[in-house]
Image (tube, rainbow, N blue to C red):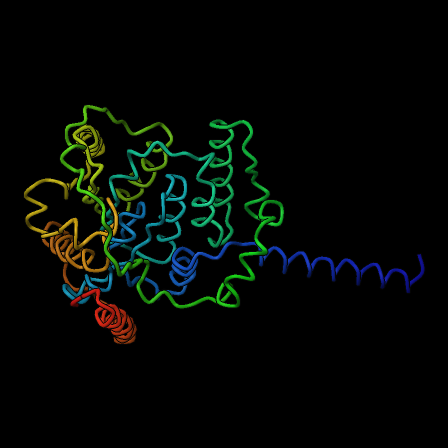
Length: 355
């Protein structure tokens, strides 16, 4: 091979690598809540978060960290994500400990009793994983998720490689690129600190009483027990209080309560259930006005839920207002004002949200 041919070959490889890199980037589905939440958290000032909440979308859409800080002076961050599998929960928790030293970890109880469908909920899994930074732990998590998917469905097309090179998996991404446009690839500061707000109500009939008549039994499965066990073990080693939260949910049953009560007693952690008549009365959550479906609160309902949970955590664990810098306080104040504007806009359009 001549020198000229060598230069052409190297140039071709570099151009090909560039094209594949761009294609790979284009094919990463951009989720406005999961992606921005992940990237914004990496940019948070170290040791500024005293309360972390995790779990599924029930927690992601019900707990507003800005509200907790505004009402109690205690800093918080919402690291929940849609249908969060236990492996991803552990990855998120470990990432959190790299830069933060929380005093309390609150986990949505529903995450512990889900029999997770790895084979057919791939989209939600990838939303939670795609924009996490690469690490040895992320690789182990991805391997286990693919293993679980294959065990459930031998024909599953999920592979470890495709989690790192989506070009191998997302062949139908192009219509979405055209539809969403430039915003699809633009990082925006997550001023809601992981909380995802919805400014609307639903029209879902209240079936909670029927659910409470269910006799179905639940258990924390082996995979969930393993990964959440690691989280709880590490919390105890780092003096982090663990609180399992039963978010108000029309699907809540006596079997779930029994399961979580027994699990929390076994693990030596706390459990609070927002589905009891007493808790429903204290929060004032109304199915017709404060939810947009059978389990997710809207922005109005999340303020009620956050107010109660924030007070509960503060009193139960004797938390004082967070000791953070003036710069970080200004950062939080700015984010609070941005969210207040969201509330004002929603109110103008007919969905009243009073901060």
